[in-house]
Amino acid sequence: MDHEPNLDRFESRRSTAYGTRGVVATSQPLAAQAGVDVLRAGGNAFDAAVATAATLNVVEPMSTGLGGDAFALYRTTDGGVGAMRACGGAPETATLERVRAAAAESQGSDPSDAEMPERGPLAVTVPGAPRGWEATVERFGRLDLAAVLDDAVHYATEGFPVSEVIASAWGLCEPALRNDAAREQYLLDGEAPAVGERMALPELGTTLETLAAEGADPFYEGAIADSIVETVQDAGGLLEHDDLAGFEVEYPDPVSTTYDGTEVFELPPNNQGLIALEALNIAREVGVPDTEDPVERTHLLAESTKLAFTDGHRYITDPASEPIPPLNSGEWARERAAEIGETAIDSPEVGMLDSPAEDADTVLLTVADGEGNVVSFINSLFMGFGSGLVAGDTGLTLQNRGASFELDPDHPNRVEPGKRPFHTLIPGLARFGDRDWAAFGVMGGYMQPQGHVQVLSNLLDRDMPLQAALDEPRWRYREDGTLATEARFDADVASKLARRGHDVAVDVPLRFGGAQIARWNDGTLSGATEPRKDGTVDVY
Image (cartoon, rainbow, N blue to C red; front, side, top):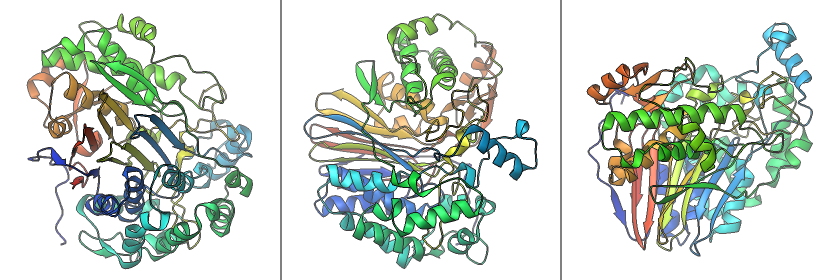
């Protein structure tokens, strides 16, 4: 149990999994099983999504949890398409001047030189997940919250064996655990649990039991809210009770486009879904669906993505703050497509926000049930263990989404009272036909829209099976303009891309995100995942 796994090696000999009544795909086996358990107990895909998310909070606690935000895209049995956004904003007292002054004090710098902290109390935004989980079950599910959270409570109180990739991530996150509560509740004698070691999180278990019995109210107006506010304020943050009490879940209309005959749905701003849609539109304009040469196809996809990132990170922000142009329109794509030629556009930087979001990681889960409910659900703390603050004895780790704010008054993502930060999290949904739907997604900060583009191209342009589409080696643009590839990426294609002006460099597999997909095709269910994390797909 004490061996060191080789996390830089990725090979897959899996096939697509098939079932008739349910499929759950996510980044950890116990969590996938929790979702299937709920389906077997009579729940639907929405119940199973929350059961899986809650169990991930326990078994992969550095990535996700009640202290973060949650989002979903879904198709219901009646054919309806919708979105759920449980995303909190900055404290109402978080003016640019006040945050800059507090950041300068903590950094020992002049206010004019202060930077938005990556962790700590100033990076904490209102957590949306408790209300998001509750609303998903109450609005769309069949079971009560207690039944849905049963496995998560069990693993938190009784313990679970830590798997390889998660053990590695936990160890890397040790320095991020900032307050005494975080160290006491998430480390064993000051160290992260080892591979195979049994770990219990009893404080988190009690908090999950509170959610099961009382719903989300205690997180926003009760005793847990008191612990959250006290922890943040004692550490020098600005969060207040009114910030929590005023939070509400939203149901925005998804944004979409059609690519190669398939309608693709994404979340609207403040999320980065428009980047994926713009990239697909540009790729369509430059003829990617009809391109068979792998070098040309990769070049065109990469350049389409580069342009979409440049636009998305220039304009996407909280739409309540300022207007956002129609980045997913055909006219916009045609104008941008005209800039793509035979060689890489000369851009030393892609135009990404200079943010810890580039390499942040998260969890994603996809669920489909036999009745045709299809759900893509994503839930995150942002960086590993988020802000590094755990609220009192609740086991609740607070996210650091505020790290995506800027302290530049001219920047569209400047911090403002109540404003939601630019959000990387994007679940995906695809309609291949009236009775053929898939929930999908790729994890990993700025990798997410790039992964959406590549997985969809593999499925649609190359007619790959689900599992093969996820296993295919990936590329990704990085903030410095590098076109990173996996070591498994075709060396001949990489070489020819370099001759076209791309700055190609090999990167480690974990930088390319895990991925999941669950599909309902007229009653036949299928799913796929990949072991870039501890991915598993469970069907029945």
